[in-house]
Image (cartoon, rainbow, N blue to C red; front, side):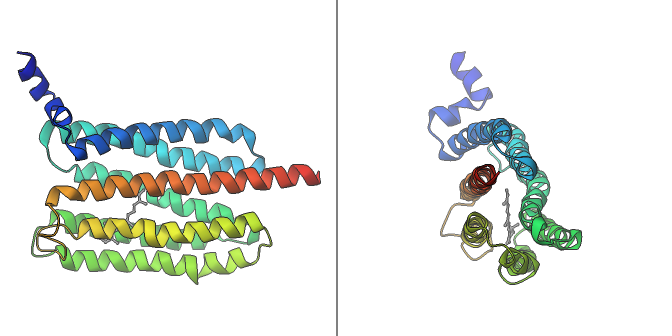
Length: 247
Ligand SMILES: *C/C=C(C)/C=C/C=C(C)/C=C/C1=C(C)CCCC1(C)C
């Protein structure tokens, strides 16, 4: 009886230490804890930084809710929760673009810059979703289209509007944050297309099991959503301390 109930709830997967199920659990708790942290820490920073921390809290909070559902879906079906995943990303990636916008706004960032970043991220995610759900014959082509959207974001941050505006600042804390965010965008975000390539018919099919796509995505989400938020938190704390010292 008990065993049956455990199996029905999908908990046997955890008991048998399924690494994917475990990363869904850890991901959920980590996102929730981070969201609480960023919301509470808003009171330690000044003025405009409160908005940046609010956005960090929203990114991790939205992810926490999606991880809650993704974890259940995975335990119940053993399948990858692709639709939940993409709904999460469609909300959180544009919010990460908002973080770049907020960081560079004091140096003249315009809403058109934010608009371009958001359009590029939507292109990246919509084509990626079609690729993941369209089957073996087409996922390479959609993956390539998605990568164009991704590369455009990388371009904006390294050489486009965001890069030019960040140069206008003489704040050491901001320059350091921009440096770290560039690492997140190039190395951290590149984990996603690598995960995508384990799909059948794609470049890494056979090298990894298809199910490992969720290991890649869960790892990447934890690094990028929480790490990104912490970088912003650290610049907010430093800039607040400086402003208070000069006051
Ligand atoms: C919090 C979620 C984040 C930062 C998600 C980022 C997702 C990507 C950078 C996804 C990129 C993809 C490609 C570049 C090609 C293959 C399809 C995707 C959508 C996995």
